[in-house]
Image (cartoon, rainbow, N blue to C red):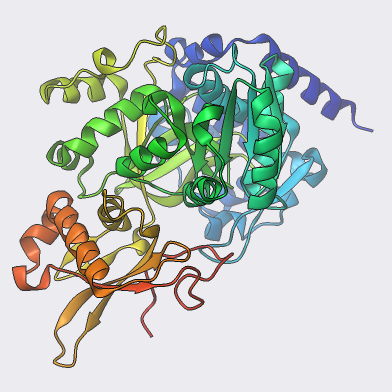
Length: 503
Protein backbone atom coordinates (compact mmCIF):
# COMPACT_ATOMS: atom_id res chain seq x y z
CA UNK A 1 0.00 0.00 0.00
CA UNK A 2 1.24 3.47 -0.90
CA UNK A 3 0.28 6.29 1.43
CA UNK A 4 1.80 8.73 -1.07
CA UNK A 5 -0.65 7.61 -3.78
CA UNK A 6 -3.54 7.94 -1.34
CA UNK A 7 -2.49 11.48 -0.52
CA UNK A 8 -2.05 12.41 -4.19
CA UNK A 9 -5.53 11.12 -5.00
CA UNK A 10 -7.22 12.77 -2.02
CA UNK A 11 -5.51 16.12 -2.47
CA UNK A 12 -6.23 16.33 -6.22
CA UNK A 13 -9.83 15.23 -5.80
CA UNK A 14 -10.48 17.74 -3.02
CA UNK A 15 -8.96 20.56 -5.07
CA UNK A 16 -11.16 19.67 -8.04
CA UNK A 17 -14.34 19.38 -5.97
CA UNK A 18 -13.75 22.56 -3.95
CA UNK A 19 -12.44 24.88 -6.66
CA UNK A 20 -15.01 26.58 -8.86
CA UNK A 21 -14.50 26.62 -12.61
CA UNK A 22 -14.13 30.39 -12.63
CA UNK A 23 -11.51 30.32 -9.87
CA UNK A 24 -9.59 27.59 -11.68
CA UNK A 25 -9.50 29.45 -14.99
CA UNK A 26 -8.67 32.80 -13.47
CA UNK A 27 -5.39 31.41 -12.12
CA UNK A 28 -3.83 32.04 -15.51
CA UNK A 29 -4.82 35.74 -15.31
CA UNK A 30 -2.91 36.25 -12.05
CA UNK A 31 0.03 33.89 -12.56
CA UNK A 32 2.63 34.12 -15.32
CA UNK A 33 2.38 30.89 -17.36
CA UNK A 34 6.11 31.20 -18.13
CA UNK A 35 6.86 30.97 -14.40
CA UNK A 36 4.64 27.92 -14.03
CA UNK A 37 6.22 26.06 -16.94
CA UNK A 38 9.71 26.76 -15.56
CA UNK A 39 8.58 25.24 -12.26
CA UNK A 40 7.22 22.19 -14.11
CA UNK A 41 10.60 21.80 -15.84
CA UNK A 42 12.40 21.85 -12.50
CA UNK A 43 10.04 19.24 -11.04
CA UNK A 44 10.45 16.96 -14.06
CA UNK A 45 14.25 17.27 -14.01
CA UNK A 46 14.25 16.33 -10.33
CA UNK A 47 11.93 13.32 -10.58
CA UNK A 48 11.87 11.77 -14.09
CA UNK A 49 14.87 9.53 -14.92
CA UNK A 50 14.30 9.56 -18.67
CA UNK A 51 14.32 13.36 -18.85
CA UNK A 52 17.45 13.49 -16.72
CA UNK A 53 19.15 11.12 -19.17
CA UNK A 54 17.79 13.03 -22.17
CA UNK A 55 19.42 16.27 -21.01
CA UNK A 56 22.63 14.61 -19.88
CA UNK A 57 23.13 12.97 -23.29
CA UNK A 58 22.90 16.44 -24.84
CA UNK A 59 25.31 18.05 -22.39
CA UNK A 60 22.66 20.27 -20.80
CA UNK A 61 23.07 21.18 -17.13
CA UNK A 62 19.57 21.65 -15.65
CA UNK A 63 20.76 24.35 -13.23
CA UNK A 64 21.58 26.59 -16.21
CA UNK A 65 17.89 26.81 -17.13
CA UNK A 66 16.89 29.81 -15.01
CA UNK A 67 14.83 32.06 -17.29
CA UNK A 68 12.09 31.55 -19.84
CA UNK A 69 14.59 32.35 -22.58
CA UNK A 70 16.74 29.50 -21.23
CA UNK A 71 13.67 27.25 -21.28
CA UNK A 72 13.06 28.06 -24.95
CA UNK A 73 16.54 26.78 -25.77
CA UNK A 74 15.72 23.28 -24.50
CA UNK A 75 15.62 20.55 -27.18
CA UNK A 76 12.24 19.32 -28.34
CA UNK A 77 10.83 16.00 -27.21
CA UNK A 78 9.28 13.66 -29.78
CA UNK A 79 7.98 10.12 -29.74
CA UNK A 80 11.11 8.98 -31.56
CA UNK A 81 13.78 10.70 -29.46
CA UNK A 82 12.09 10.35 -26.08
CA UNK A 83 8.97 8.19 -25.67
CA UNK A 84 10.25 5.27 -27.76
CA UNK A 85 13.85 5.55 -26.58
CA UNK A 86 13.57 5.05 -22.82
CA UNK A 87 11.94 2.33 -20.69
CA UNK A 88 8.29 3.11 -19.93
CA UNK A 89 8.87 3.26 -16.17
CA UNK A 90 11.73 5.77 -16.59
CA UNK A 91 9.35 8.17 -18.34
CA UNK A 92 7.24 8.31 -15.16
CA UNK A 93 8.01 10.14 -11.94
CA UNK A 94 10.59 8.40 -9.73
CA UNK A 95 11.02 5.78 -12.46
CA UNK A 96 8.01 3.88 -11.16
CA UNK A 97 5.29 2.67 -13.48
CA UNK A 98 3.11 1.88 -10.47
CA UNK A 99 3.04 5.61 -9.69
CA UNK A 100 0.27 5.56 -12.32
CA UNK A 101 -2.96 3.59 -12.19
CA UNK A 102 -4.15 3.34 -15.81
CA UNK A 103 -2.48 2.82 -19.19
CA UNK A 104 -4.05 3.97 -22.44
CA UNK A 105 -2.91 3.14 -25.97
CA UNK A 106 -2.61 5.59 -28.85
CA UNK A 107 -4.25 4.72 -32.14
CA UNK A 108 -0.98 4.06 -33.92
CA UNK A 109 -2.16 6.05 -36.97
CA UNK A 110 1.38 7.33 -37.55
CA UNK A 111 3.26 4.22 -36.52
CA UNK A 112 3.40 1.64 -33.79
CA UNK A 113 0.89 2.06 -30.93
CA UNK A 114 2.27 3.78 -27.85
CA UNK A 115 1.48 3.23 -24.16
CA UNK A 116 0.51 6.27 -22.08
CA UNK A 117 0.29 5.75 -18.29
CA UNK A 118 -1.54 8.23 -16.07
CA UNK A 119 -2.78 8.57 -12.51
CA UNK A 120 -6.18 9.63 -11.17
CA UNK A 121 -4.84 13.09 -10.30
CA UNK A 122 -3.95 13.68 -13.96
CA UNK A 123 -7.61 13.41 -14.93
CA UNK A 124 -8.89 16.36 -12.93
CA UNK A 125 -7.26 19.10 -15.00
CA UNK A 126 -8.73 17.38 -18.08
CA UNK A 127 -12.10 17.15 -16.34
CA UNK A 128 -11.93 20.95 -16.09
CA UNK A 129 -12.05 21.11 -19.90
CA UNK A 130 -15.26 19.05 -19.81
CA UNK A 131 -16.58 21.27 -17.02
CA UNK A 132 -16.09 24.30 -19.26
CA UNK A 133 -18.21 22.64 -21.92
CA UNK A 134 -20.92 21.17 -19.71
CA UNK A 135 -21.32 24.26 -17.54
CA UNK A 136 -20.62 27.18 -19.86
CA UNK A 137 -22.02 25.78 -23.11
CA UNK A 138 -24.64 23.22 -22.05
CA UNK A 139 -25.67 24.80 -18.69
CA UNK A 140 -25.47 21.32 -17.20
CA UNK A 141 -25.16 22.74 -13.70
CA UNK A 142 -28.92 23.43 -13.83
CA UNK A 143 -30.13 20.85 -16.38
CA UNK A 144 -30.16 17.10 -15.85
CA UNK A 145 -27.89 15.69 -18.54
CA UNK A 146 -27.44 12.19 -19.93
CA UNK A 147 -23.85 11.90 -21.21
CA UNK A 148 -23.71 9.15 -23.83
CA UNK A 149 -20.12 8.05 -24.47
CA UNK A 150 -19.91 7.11 -28.17
CA UNK A 151 -16.12 6.92 -28.38
CA UNK A 152 -14.65 3.45 -28.79
CA UNK A 153 -14.16 1.76 -25.44
CA UNK A 154 -11.18 -0.41 -24.53
CA UNK A 155 -7.49 0.46 -24.31
CA UNK A 156 -7.83 3.51 -26.59
CA UNK A 157 -7.71 6.79 -24.79
CA UNK A 158 -10.96 8.45 -25.92
CA UNK A 159 -13.75 6.39 -24.40
CA UNK A 160 -12.36 5.59 -20.97
CA UNK A 161 -10.89 9.07 -20.44
CA UNK A 162 -14.14 10.78 -21.45
CA UNK A 163 -16.25 8.55 -19.23
CA UNK A 164 -13.95 9.20 -16.25
CA UNK A 165 -14.02 12.97 -16.72
CA UNK A 166 -17.81 13.08 -17.01
CA UNK A 167 -18.13 11.01 -13.83
CA UNK A 168 -15.83 13.48 -12.07
CA UNK A 169 -18.30 16.24 -12.99
CA UNK A 170 -21.10 14.22 -11.42
CA UNK A 171 -18.99 13.79 -8.28
CA UNK A 172 -18.53 17.56 -8.16
CA UNK A 173 -22.29 17.96 -7.99
CA UNK A 174 -23.37 18.41 -11.60
CA UNK A 175 -26.63 16.59 -12.40
CA UNK A 176 -24.80 14.52 -15.05
CA UNK A 177 -25.38 10.79 -15.52
CA UNK A 178 -23.02 8.76 -17.71
CA UNK A 179 -23.84 5.78 -19.91
CA UNK A 180 -21.21 3.99 -22.03
CA UNK A 181 -22.54 2.23 -25.14
CA UNK A 182 -19.28 3.01 -26.97
CA UNK A 183 -19.47 2.85 -30.76
CA UNK A 184 -22.27 0.28 -30.78
CA UNK A 185 -25.04 2.08 -32.66
CA UNK A 186 -27.79 -0.35 -31.67
CA UNK A 187 -26.90 0.13 -28.01
CA UNK A 188 -26.75 3.92 -28.45
CA UNK A 189 -30.26 3.91 -29.89
CA UNK A 190 -31.51 1.69 -27.08
CA UNK A 191 -30.20 3.93 -24.30
CA UNK A 192 -31.43 7.07 -26.06
CA UNK A 193 -34.94 5.69 -26.52
CA UNK A 194 -35.22 4.45 -22.95
CA UNK A 195 -33.20 6.98 -20.96
CA UNK A 196 -33.27 10.29 -22.86
CA UNK A 197 -36.90 11.09 -21.91
CA UNK A 198 -35.83 11.02 -18.24
CA UNK A 199 -33.39 13.95 -18.65
CA UNK A 200 -33.55 17.61 -19.62
CA UNK A 201 -30.90 17.12 -22.31
CA UNK A 202 -28.64 14.52 -23.93
CA UNK A 203 -24.93 14.98 -24.72
CA UNK A 204 -23.48 12.65 -27.36
CA UNK A 205 -19.68 12.42 -27.13
CA UNK A 206 -17.69 10.91 -30.02
CA UNK A 207 -15.80 11.40 -33.29
CA UNK A 208 -17.60 13.77 -35.70
CA UNK A 209 -18.13 11.32 -38.61
CA UNK A 210 -19.43 8.65 -36.25
CA UNK A 211 -21.80 11.04 -34.47
CA UNK A 212 -23.21 12.13 -37.82
CA UNK A 213 -23.69 8.46 -38.75
CA UNK A 214 -25.46 7.89 -35.41
CA UNK A 215 -27.76 10.86 -36.00
CA UNK A 216 -28.55 9.93 -39.62
CA UNK A 217 -29.10 6.26 -38.80
CA UNK A 218 -31.23 7.24 -35.80
CA UNK A 219 -33.45 9.38 -38.01
CA UNK A 220 -33.87 6.40 -40.37
CA UNK A 221 -34.92 4.33 -37.33
CA UNK A 222 -37.49 6.87 -36.25
CA UNK A 223 -35.59 8.66 -33.48
CA UNK A 224 -36.70 12.28 -33.21
CA UNK A 225 -33.51 13.87 -31.94
CA UNK A 226 -35.02 17.33 -31.62
CA UNK A 227 -37.20 16.23 -28.69
CA UNK A 228 -34.14 15.38 -26.55
CA UNK A 229 -32.29 18.75 -26.62
CA UNK A 230 -29.16 17.07 -28.01
CA UNK A 231 -25.68 18.51 -27.49
CA UNK A 232 -22.49 17.22 -29.15
CA UNK A 233 -18.95 16.91 -27.79
CA UNK A 234 -16.43 15.92 -30.45
CA UNK A 235 -12.73 15.20 -30.91
CA UNK A 236 -10.31 13.76 -33.40
CA UNK A 237 -11.09 15.51 -36.71
CA UNK A 238 -11.44 18.95 -38.22
CA UNK A 239 -14.94 19.64 -39.53
CA UNK A 240 -16.48 22.56 -41.40
CA UNK A 241 -19.09 25.01 -40.19
CA UNK A 242 -21.33 23.65 -42.97
CA UNK A 243 -21.03 20.29 -41.21
CA UNK A 244 -22.04 21.92 -37.92
CA UNK A 245 -25.03 23.57 -39.62
CA UNK A 246 -26.11 20.31 -41.25
CA UNK A 247 -25.88 18.23 -38.09
CA UNK A 248 -27.46 21.06 -36.11
CA UNK A 249 -30.50 21.01 -38.40
CA UNK A 250 -30.89 17.27 -37.92
CA UNK A 251 -30.78 17.41 -34.12
CA UNK A 252 -32.93 20.54 -33.91
CA UNK A 253 -30.16 22.86 -32.68
CA UNK A 254 -31.08 26.53 -32.62
CA UNK A 255 -27.88 27.82 -31.03
CA UNK A 256 -24.78 26.22 -32.56
CA UNK A 257 -22.34 28.26 -30.46
CA UNK A 258 -23.75 26.64 -27.31
CA UNK A 259 -24.93 23.23 -28.57
CA UNK A 260 -21.57 21.96 -29.86
CA UNK A 261 -18.02 21.75 -28.53
CA UNK A 262 -14.93 20.16 -30.03
CA UNK A 263 -11.92 19.07 -28.00
CA UNK A 264 -8.30 19.31 -29.09
CA UNK A 265 -6.89 16.20 -27.49
CA UNK A 266 -4.07 13.72 -27.84
CA UNK A 267 -3.34 10.35 -26.32
CA UNK A 268 -0.04 11.88 -25.20
CA UNK A 269 -1.53 14.33 -22.71
CA UNK A 270 -5.32 14.26 -22.74
CA UNK A 271 -7.29 17.36 -23.73
CA UNK A 272 -5.13 20.38 -24.58
CA UNK A 273 -7.90 22.88 -25.36
CA UNK A 274 -11.60 23.08 -26.14
CA UNK A 275 -14.06 25.01 -28.21
CA UNK A 276 -15.97 27.68 -26.32
CA UNK A 277 -19.04 29.62 -27.42
CA UNK A 278 -16.65 32.48 -28.20
CA UNK A 279 -14.26 30.41 -30.31
CA UNK A 280 -17.19 28.88 -32.24
CA UNK A 281 -18.68 32.31 -32.92
CA UNK A 282 -15.31 33.50 -34.22
CA UNK A 283 -14.77 30.40 -36.36
CA UNK A 284 -18.20 30.82 -37.94
CA UNK A 285 -17.22 34.36 -38.93
CA UNK A 286 -14.05 33.06 -40.58
CA UNK A 287 -16.05 30.38 -42.43
CA UNK A 288 -18.02 33.17 -44.09
CA UNK A 289 -14.94 35.33 -44.67
CA UNK A 290 -12.22 33.08 -46.15
CA UNK A 291 -9.98 36.02 -47.08
CA UNK A 292 -9.83 37.14 -43.45
CA UNK A 293 -9.18 33.53 -42.40
CA UNK A 294 -6.28 33.24 -44.85
CA UNK A 295 -4.82 36.52 -43.62
CA UNK A 296 -4.84 35.35 -40.01
CA UNK A 297 -4.13 31.61 -40.29
CA UNK A 298 -2.02 31.66 -43.44
CA UNK A 299 -3.71 28.74 -45.23
CA UNK A 300 -6.66 28.13 -47.52
CA UNK A 301 -8.48 25.91 -45.06
CA UNK A 302 -10.29 26.55 -41.83
CA UNK A 303 -8.53 25.14 -38.76
CA UNK A 304 -10.01 23.90 -35.53
CA UNK A 305 -10.04 26.92 -33.21
CA UNK A 306 -10.08 26.41 -29.43
CA UNK A 307 -9.15 28.27 -26.28
CA UNK A 308 -6.73 26.84 -23.76
CA UNK A 309 -5.55 27.34 -20.19
CA UNK A 310 -1.80 28.10 -20.35
CA UNK A 311 -1.37 27.01 -16.72
CA UNK A 312 -2.61 23.53 -17.61
CA UNK A 313 -1.03 23.16 -21.07
CA UNK A 314 1.66 25.62 -22.14
CA UNK A 315 1.89 26.08 -25.92
CA UNK A 316 4.73 27.32 -28.11
CA UNK A 317 5.21 27.32 -31.86
CA UNK A 318 8.20 26.43 -34.00
CA UNK A 319 8.30 26.52 -37.80
CA UNK A 320 4.53 26.57 -38.06
CA UNK A 321 3.99 23.59 -35.77
CA UNK A 322 2.84 23.32 -32.17
CA UNK A 323 4.80 22.40 -29.05
CA UNK A 324 3.32 21.95 -25.62
CA UNK A 325 4.44 21.31 -22.05
CA UNK A 326 2.24 19.78 -19.40
CA UNK A 327 2.03 17.49 -16.41
CA UNK A 328 0.70 13.98 -16.86
CA UNK A 329 1.57 10.37 -16.05
CA UNK A 330 4.45 11.00 -18.45
CA UNK A 331 5.26 14.72 -17.93
CA UNK A 332 6.22 16.40 -21.21
CA UNK A 333 8.48 19.41 -21.75
CA UNK A 334 8.45 21.16 -25.16
CA UNK A 335 6.82 18.14 -26.79
CA UNK A 336 6.47 18.23 -30.56
CA UNK A 337 3.45 16.38 -31.96
CA UNK A 338 3.73 17.48 -35.61
CA UNK A 339 0.42 19.35 -35.62
CA UNK A 340 0.46 22.35 -37.94
CA UNK A 341 -0.99 25.41 -36.25
CA UNK A 342 -0.33 28.43 -34.08
CA UNK A 343 -1.33 30.45 -31.03
CA UNK A 344 -3.10 33.81 -30.87
CA UNK A 345 -3.45 35.96 -27.76
CA UNK A 346 -6.99 36.89 -26.73
CA UNK A 347 -6.43 40.61 -27.25
CA UNK A 348 -4.73 40.01 -30.60
CA UNK A 349 -7.71 37.98 -31.82
CA UNK A 350 -10.27 40.59 -30.83
CA UNK A 351 -8.17 43.35 -32.38
CA UNK A 352 -7.90 41.47 -35.68
CA UNK A 353 -11.66 40.85 -35.72
CA UNK A 354 -12.37 44.51 -34.95
CA UNK A 355 -10.19 45.53 -37.89
CA UNK A 356 -12.30 43.22 -40.03
CA UNK A 357 -15.58 44.68 -38.80
CA UNK A 358 -16.65 41.90 -36.42
CA UNK A 359 -17.34 41.96 -32.68
CA UNK A 360 -17.93 38.39 -31.42
CA UNK A 361 -18.81 39.56 -27.90
CA UNK A 362 -21.72 41.55 -29.29
CA UNK A 363 -22.66 38.79 -31.72
CA UNK A 364 -22.95 35.96 -29.18
CA UNK A 365 -26.47 35.26 -27.90
CA UNK A 366 -26.76 36.26 -24.26
CA UNK A 367 -26.20 33.37 -21.85
CA UNK A 368 -25.21 35.41 -18.83
CA UNK A 369 -21.64 35.84 -20.13
CA UNK A 370 -20.93 32.17 -19.50
CA UNK A 371 -17.67 31.01 -20.97
CA UNK A 372 -16.36 34.45 -21.90
CA UNK A 373 -12.89 34.09 -20.43
CA UNK A 374 -9.92 36.01 -21.91
CA UNK A 375 -8.00 32.81 -22.56
CA UNK A 376 -5.58 32.53 -25.50
CA UNK A 377 -6.49 30.69 -28.69
CA UNK A 378 -4.73 27.83 -30.43
CA UNK A 379 -5.57 26.80 -33.98
CA UNK A 380 -4.84 23.38 -35.41
CA UNK A 381 -4.79 22.19 -39.00
CA UNK A 382 -3.66 18.66 -38.20
CA UNK A 383 -1.13 16.59 -40.05
CA UNK A 384 0.02 17.71 -43.49
CA UNK A 385 0.15 14.18 -44.94
CA UNK A 386 -3.62 14.31 -45.50
CA UNK A 387 -3.21 16.82 -48.34
CA UNK A 388 -2.61 16.29 -52.05
CA UNK A 389 -0.59 18.57 -54.32
CA UNK A 390 -2.21 19.44 -57.68
CA UNK A 391 -0.45 21.86 -60.06
CA UNK A 392 1.46 23.08 -57.01
CA UNK A 393 -1.70 23.82 -55.03
CA UNK A 394 -2.21 22.06 -51.70
CA UNK A 395 -5.72 20.65 -51.53
CA UNK A 396 -7.07 19.83 -48.09
CA UNK A 397 -9.85 17.45 -47.05
CA UNK A 398 -11.56 20.39 -45.37
CA UNK A 399 -12.03 22.05 -48.77
CA UNK A 400 -13.71 18.96 -50.23
CA UNK A 401 -15.92 18.42 -47.17
CA UNK A 402 -17.58 21.81 -47.63
CA UNK A 403 -18.54 20.86 -51.19
CA UNK A 404 -20.21 17.66 -49.97
CA UNK A 405 -22.14 19.48 -47.25
CA UNK A 406 -24.10 21.79 -49.53
CA UNK A 407 -27.91 21.56 -49.82
CA UNK A 408 -28.93 19.17 -52.56
CA UNK A 409 -25.72 17.16 -52.13
CA UNK A 410 -25.47 16.29 -48.46
CA UNK A 411 -28.40 13.85 -48.40
CA UNK A 412 -26.73 11.67 -51.04
CA UNK A 413 -23.44 11.06 -49.25
CA UNK A 414 -22.00 9.97 -45.91
CA UNK A 415 -19.25 12.61 -45.91
CA UNK A 416 -16.44 10.13 -46.50
CA UNK A 417 -14.28 10.54 -49.60
CA UNK A 418 -10.82 9.85 -50.95
CA UNK A 419 -8.93 12.41 -53.02
CA UNK A 420 -6.16 11.47 -55.43
CA UNK A 421 -4.27 13.04 -58.29
CA UNK A 422 -4.38 10.65 -61.28
CA UNK A 423 -3.33 10.68 -64.95
CA UNK A 424 -5.46 9.91 -67.99
CA UNK A 425 -4.31 7.96 -71.05
CA UNK A 426 -2.56 11.06 -72.41
CA UNK A 427 -0.71 11.56 -69.10
CA UNK A 428 -2.76 14.63 -68.23
CA UNK A 429 -3.28 14.97 -64.51
CA UNK A 430 -6.75 15.31 -62.99
CA UNK A 431 -8.20 15.57 -59.51
CA UNK A 432 -10.10 12.42 -58.61
CA UNK A 433 -12.61 12.39 -55.74
CA UNK A 434 -14.12 9.03 -54.79
CA UNK A 435 -17.22 9.58 -52.64
CA UNK A 436 -19.18 7.17 -50.44
CA UNK A 437 -22.93 7.14 -51.05
CA UNK A 438 -25.42 7.10 -48.20
CA UNK A 439 -26.78 3.62 -47.39
CA UNK A 440 -29.16 2.12 -49.96
CA UNK A 441 -28.62 4.91 -52.52
CA UNK A 442 -27.33 4.17 -56.03
CA UNK A 443 -25.28 6.72 -57.89
CA UNK A 444 -25.66 8.03 -61.44
CA UNK A 445 -23.87 10.40 -63.78
CA UNK A 446 -26.15 13.31 -62.94
CA UNK A 447 -25.28 12.99 -59.23
CA UNK A 448 -21.56 12.72 -60.01
CA UNK A 449 -21.69 15.91 -62.11
CA UNK A 450 -23.60 17.81 -59.42
CA UNK A 451 -21.14 16.77 -56.73
CA UNK A 452 -18.15 17.64 -58.93
CA UNK A 453 -19.52 21.13 -59.55
CA UNK A 454 -20.27 21.67 -55.86
CA UNK A 455 -16.71 20.67 -54.90
CA UNK A 456 -15.29 22.87 -57.67
CA UNK A 457 -17.34 25.87 -56.50
CA UNK A 458 -16.10 25.56 -52.92
CA UNK A 459 -12.49 24.96 -53.96
CA UNK A 460 -12.53 28.19 -55.97
CA UNK A 461 -14.10 30.05 -53.03
CA UNK A 462 -11.93 28.68 -50.24
CA UNK A 463 -8.57 27.78 -51.74
CA UNK A 464 -6.73 30.66 -53.41
CA UNK A 465 -3.86 28.37 -54.48
CA UNK A 466 -6.30 26.14 -56.35
CA UNK A 467 -8.02 29.14 -57.96
CA UNK A 468 -4.73 30.67 -59.14
CA UNK A 469 -2.39 27.72 -59.74
CA UNK A 470 -4.64 25.20 -61.46
CA UNK A 471 -5.48 25.91 -65.12
CA UNK A 472 -9.21 26.41 -65.56
CA UNK A 473 -9.60 23.34 -67.80
CA UNK A 474 -8.27 21.14 -64.98
CA UNK A 475 -10.24 22.65 -62.10
CA UNK A 476 -13.39 20.52 -62.30
CA UNK A 477 -12.71 17.31 -60.37
CA UNK A 478 -13.71 13.89 -61.59
CA UNK A 479 -16.11 12.29 -59.12
CA UNK A 480 -16.72 8.57 -58.71
CA UNK A 481 -19.57 7.36 -56.48
CA UNK A 482 -19.18 4.08 -54.64
CA UNK A 483 -21.75 2.26 -52.48
CA UNK A 484 -21.76 2.52 -48.70
CA UNK A 485 -19.04 0.40 -47.11
CA UNK A 486 -17.12 -0.30 -50.34
CA UNK A 487 -14.39 -2.70 -49.16
CA UNK A 488 -11.58 -1.03 -51.13
CA UNK A 489 -12.23 2.65 -50.42
CA UNK A 490 -14.60 2.70 -47.43
CA UNK A 491 -14.15 -0.47 -45.36
CA UNK A 492 -16.42 -0.51 -42.32
CA UNK A 493 -14.76 -0.39 -38.91
CA UNK A 494 -11.43 0.98 -40.17
CA UNK A 495 -10.11 4.47 -39.48
CA UNK A 496 -10.77 6.42 -42.66
CA UNK A 497 -8.03 8.14 -44.64
CA UNK A 498 -8.84 10.92 -47.07
CA UNK A 499 -5.84 10.29 -49.32
CA UNK A 500 -4.25 7.14 -50.75
CA UNK A 501 -0.59 6.26 -50.99
CA UNK A 502 0.87 5.98 -54.44
CA UNK A 503 1.73 2.44 -55.52
